[in-house]
Image (cartoon, rainbow, N blue to C red):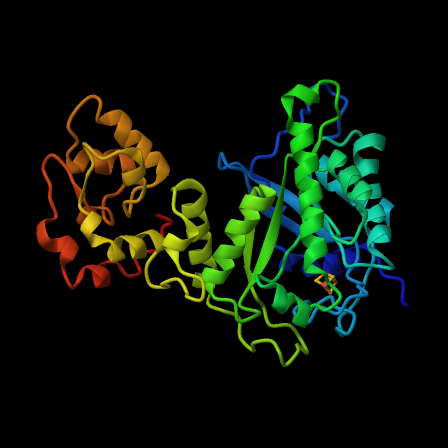
Length: 406
Ligand code: SF4
């Protein structure tokens, strides 16, 4: 094989990493750079952005250690039968790249994944060596997200957790039977086992009663589900997410619309699903995590989300009898279920109404807009009357004004 220069490797291995969506950093503890001993955070090759819950945007060097892989997952551009240019970083190259980019303030951290080379343990060991060297040899205090190889030993995964802020194990396909068909070398039960082990480790390290004197550990794990590579409907995907959140205490499930790949298998769709489908799944995911909705309330297994309106509006249109909601009297739970009212807006409404009876303008002031909430709420000076039952309500709520989250 021709020897590739570092720039060419970076081009190949950052491009190959772009299919992984599970790299946001929400909920991670910030490593402290104060003290002067730690190292160091352009748009450019391999740099992606992730958002913390406070809205802080962080830049990560997002790369694969290698895009060689011994597996043949039909949906993956890096599968062994794929005819793509291959490259492999050495451990030292990844460490040096990360440090150089960090010192130049190009990045605030590293997202590292890899194809499987030789064995799961061998691959995981290489990735752990990168993180270990960054933390122990170079006192690197930036953010590290490591993708775990499910076939690797629990001990290696546990060591990865000592150096990473976040780890993730990709479930990839929402249905186990799809995984068996499209990624026959992968083992759905093994993926679950690996997630279960990691959950226990994370909880163990987070337990304040046992934390004293213990080394820090990754604060959470996440996963990715590919949307549109198999026949799973949105209801099936969200049911899987709900089960994953419940069973493994995941910080996030990421949804990645399937991208057709060169020389793809005939078992795969020719076109990617509409991006709005991915967007609706994220909205539905938020409803489950922050708005008190059960998965079954949003969409039944075997059914798809309404692409024309956001899932909360779709739910409200199916439950028109519950509306309009009096913003001066309704409890938080009910307000959260009202279209157009986000969690922050609801908290502001609850605060503001202790001082005065809110008018429509007051709600607009605290929520930023009442455009979508208006047909569903009653205020001191506004009632939608029969509009909430009107035939034209759904049509009036359809895009383009549906592009905001809630
Ligand atoms: S194991 Fe990962 S990198 Fe390898 S073919 Fe499957 S999805 Fe792609």
